[in-house]
Image 1 (cartoon, rainbow, N blue to C red):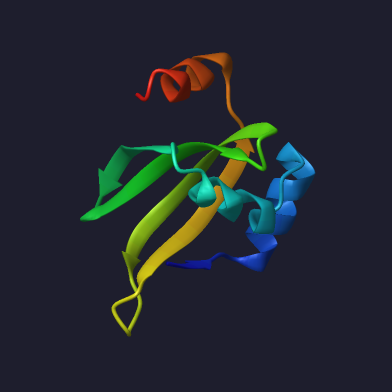
Image 2: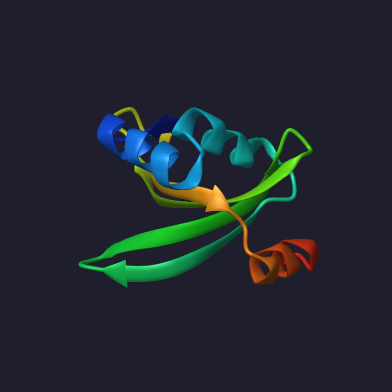
Length: 95
């Protein structure tokens, strides 16, 4: 799995939500993360993944999924923030 993002977007996200995308990718190390389709447009699905980071913070990461030129799964991070209470309940119930 490989990750990418727009550097301007991670700076904006850090200012708005206090989370940079280097931290956001840690959500995908959580063995119990919950991923669900958010919406699709022009054949591209936007995903929402909820997971713990280092056993402390529960984050929601919005991203795209695809494959890079070598066929490796590619996650393009769009935004990240603390999970809401409702999102926390979805995570705790396994969706």
